[in-house]
Length: 143
Image 1 (cartoon, rainbow, N blue to C red):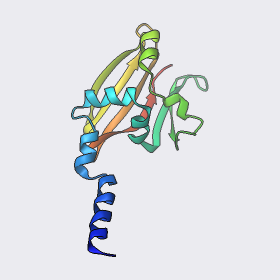
Image 2 (image 1 turned 180 degrees about the horizontal axis):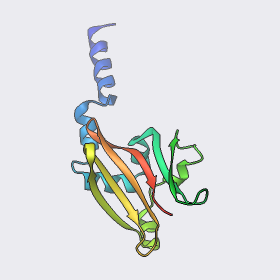
Image 3 (image 1 turned 90 degrees about the vertical axis):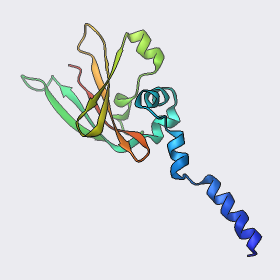
Image 4 (image 1 turned 45 degrees about the vertical axis):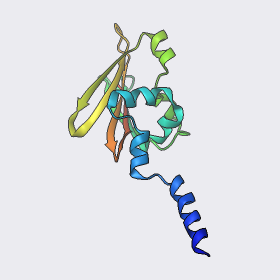
C-alpha cells in the first residue's frame, strides 16, 4: 500500500470511529437535556439503555402484603421489555403523568412518573456511563 492510500484509509476509518470528543458531543451536557433527548428519540433510547436491565415490580396478588419482585430484562425483545417502555410525551399528557427528577445515592438519577390521585408510579434509573448517561434500572411501584 502506498503512503497516500494509508493516509486516506486512516482518515476514512477515523471519521467513523466514536472518539471520546464525538461521543461526548452526542450526549447533552446536562441531565434534563439528556432526558429530553431520551424521551424524543427511540434510537437514542436504545443506545443508552444498558442490557441486561435490572427491573422490579410490586406483586400484590400472591400474598397478604404486597412485595417487590425483581427480574431482568435481557433485551428489547424480552416479554417484560414493554413494561419498561418510556412514555411518549403524548401518553404523559393524555394520562396526566407527572414527571420528577431526583438524585439517588451512587451518582444515580431517578426519573419518576406518577399519576396524581392514584397508585400508578414507575421510575427509570440512570447512571453516568463514560461521557453520557445510561438507563440501568426500571421499577414499577404501582400497586
